[in-house]
Image (tube, rainbow, N blue to C red; front, top):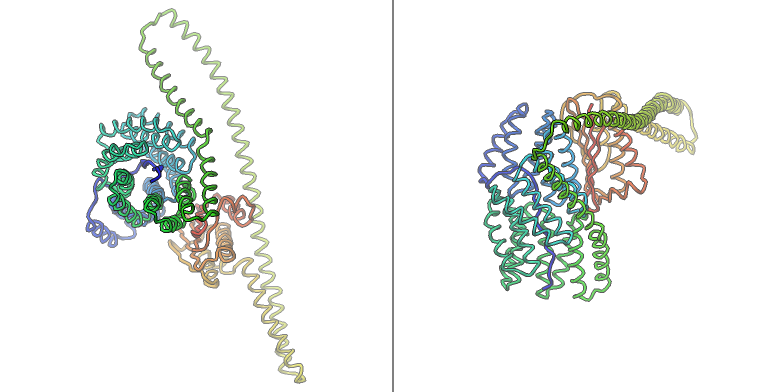
Length: 639
């Protein structure tokens, strides 16, 4: 059996229950929640927090639903701390499900919320999780910068438990970058701290990683020793980490000849990951199972398994993709499919060269060296401060010199700061100028659309209606030759069609229902008149500012039309949420999806126009899509 690269486990910072609660506890809480009044948001959020702590252990889909409920309720009430908690929870779940883009989106939102709250501790926890995302997406230097900055912060506040987590993650980063000795060094440091602070989860994760380091060196007995201890700790703490440990310990058992035990462990892990929709875990379990199949000569089954894995794979997780390509390559070689083997081999080499070149390794080492150097300099400064070699005359002289130097330095810093502020202000003015220009263009467009719509509807539309009426009256009063009756009837039908088409064009330019009855009514009319589209409204009936209503309507119109033209979707869902100070619209479809970065870089005007509208009104836009996974667009305005 070939020697696999098995991935260490990363520690994600989050708050969860210490042990698994019974299902009856969750049922009881859901029953209480259903009876809680809609106005009692504080009680609702308290119950949802308890449900999340239960579900996050072994039911990610249920936890995701609860986290979204937290997100929407806290958004309606403006509870900033609860909103940050919900955003962080969503980031954690999406990370475990292998959806890195969605995870990063919600973690960044949580970071913004926590900065407003000035909650440095929770902000640091979120940054650790963001560092993990950069690590699995092969942005190693960014991840290392985040980790070392956080390590300095946790040292400054003497948080030993968090230092242990960071050291574990740095060890995993070194392992991924190919430096196993450094990886083991940091992980052992982490384990010592975690045992000292009674951090069971952290201890278990470090033990799993040490098991990985041992098995990759061929020391399977040591790998089992570390792994079995980790399994004992993890079983009642976190099912997803438990599944990760099963795969790694199972591999050690396979190598010492206990193959059935290894297969059993892997199957159990696959079941846990499927139940939790944990894409990242499923990918690893699929690969491991595929390796066992190849070893036993079941090459076609291994190839089939690899193809299934490709269907659910998160392509942003480059390490997962490299290892999956390797498995498919080996399957194709054994099945004598040369073209396929060459293709997967080239993809694997291309990604590996991009991700694991010397530049990455150098950057990581440079950041680590900088951190350790700064740490030593601080230690030297502290020692020097302890020396009592003060002389009054010398001290006076030094103080005099320091005062002069300080004054000069202050003047220099003041001027420099003024220069920086001026440059920043120029930049802000340029941005404001662009936004103002864009707003003027869009407002002019809205005004012109309204004018043309009125002219068409009231002017030309009225004239056509009068013409139709006169012709119909003449038809009743004139004797028309039989051969011309059909022509006259055809002319009247053409007038009818023209009037309908004109009204359609006028409505598209500026819907009458939007101007008279507001955004909810206009979107409801639009969705009812469009095939495959369903519409849902939540919140309070109110009228936002006219420019926000018009922009939101245009955005939904553009997104729905894009889905109809390009996505091959069977269902398109439009949701409008109106709070007291927020307009939030969601458009999602079950179509073929697309590569968002490629679509925007190719210069398509659709997305650019939408982003321009959103930016001009100070709104936010989130695009979640990938090939084969549908599309979801969230647009939000404070209005």
